Length: 255
Ligand SMILES: [Ca+2]
Ligand SMILES: [Ca+2]
Ligand SMILES: [Ca+2]
Image (spheres, rainbow, N blue to C red):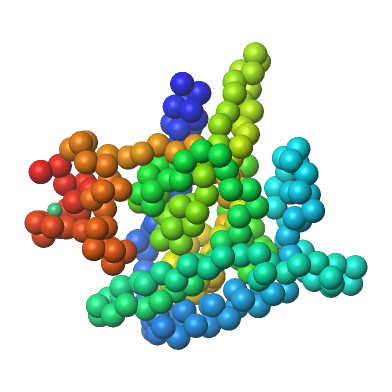
């Protein structure tokens, strides 16, 4: 019940991560492959020059967040993020039908004890979004629900790397979360907003999100009894399938 109430709250307060359709028409579109390579270099530079507070996370009672810092001075001997992240190559279909590889990096600080969301499920999470210069462009320390079909692809795929946790409701009706997945994802603009200026995110910006994943709801968007995970993108091109080609993707197409 508490989760439901917060869900309603989240729907009206959170809009940033929802994909916006506004196109930036001022500058000619950059080449997707060249941008992917340039963004990957920028992300690798960040990962090799920064570490996170893994010493804090070695304490099972630590319930704070992830902090990034540079490998300088007294921190020069820390283990860089580049040695602690995993990488997934994601192929993105461009407007002209080509597939361009993009690299998503993810840091698992705590794996979580619950279930892994499908990339189309609803997730209950808190997050902080940063540019590579560590400017925070958006955050919610209060958990919010996100339908992963409505966020940028990097976030959708990245949330899929973590497991949810559990919670208990205290006598004063506050909620304690525990055992939840915690980490960060790093992805190029081709998995984000690419050429769009979106809020405080400039065009062609690689993005970082710190994520705490508390809960997962499996979705069946069109209520046809087939989970969205089973009909969203069976051909794996990253674009929602539309088998009957009527313009409504299968996961929203109840017939
Ligand atoms: Ca369905
Ligand atoms: Ca597809
Ligand atoms: Ca259809």
